[in-house]
Image (tube, rainbow, N blue to C red; front, top):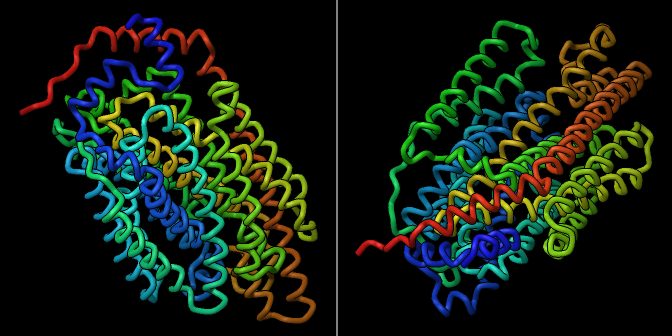
Length: 546
């Protein structure tokens, strides 16, 4: 096979002959029976994915209820969200590597059991600290589940069908958002807040039973050494970084504690990069980032999930606390976002076939940015819900056609026998971007809200200026005209903070669009394809060990 032919197959997403030979040697291949029931297998994988997505979507709808029942403020709420995301993101690379080494079905089932057990503990908890701890353990279980779903998908679907399967996989993230919001709202209407965690236990049981019959065994035959130091450094660095961002508004951005936290994060993350560059078997081979397709895909996913998770964290508070919808009504009103995301994600493979990754991903990011900007323009204390619905549909359409092609590009950049690591890279960029989005955008809203409310609460409790939920509770306790005035002032201050923060998210996404377009310029991708083609053509197939 010539270098030109290899380059063409790489651009189209098809594997080279050398890759096929190597993957057959290194991978425990799928059987004919596995192939015949591959779409049923995809269904089980999507059920598991929906559960992971629901873990955050359902929680966001329940945040106001948790704030009241557990008596915690905005920082506590952010940690309930971010404890899951931080542990998840920190463990993903190690979990993906373990799945490749010891079996992806084992990783999936083990992660499901841990996730389900932690969900049960969370449902029975009575304090914010216990919920945070349970969420952290849930993140550990999810770290094994999510990369296993995508790596198993890559294992059972041939290259020609893989883009379509990945698009469906990505689209079900939107289904998870829809189910999370509505199911959580319905459960909160009928039961206590712990019921939103019990639903995870039900999904885990269904996924385990179905997976017993439908999930094939697959693992890498060559066992590369693990990288425990890399895992420890990544977890410590990310935790320090996000801790500093979350606590910045509370402690002051220039306080000694905040600056020391950021300094620790910078040192640890630099140590992680230094170690990964020198490790013989790194957890994350940083050489992958020399491929512009890989770099563009990880950049797009990180920044689109920064905006997605960060804005979604604020949507439910805007609908419930500003416009007065209950949890179920708020969940139903976010359905248009989820449905639009599902539609665009599942159709994205056809768009990439026609227009190419560069134009589809860059255009999707631009559309998402326009949707966020439209929401910033139209949001107010008295704004019609329909403006909200139109804006989030535009946002979701752009995000849907961005994430699936970017996921496919990451998976195509690595050989099939490293599917677990490739999936983990994809999931890590999602969770890291999402965790930072919640932390940064949530902190910006909290900072501006406090700044607007300081000095306006009079003789009311000081906590009335700490968050909108606290301010509304203080207004209800005050009653009369004073209470009504405080409630209006607080809602107005929150909307002002909400809209200005949305502009930040919109700018981030649009800048990402230009960055992706530059990374995927024809001259850069042609050079990268030629280099990969030369490497593939000159690398002999690897013989499987006896």
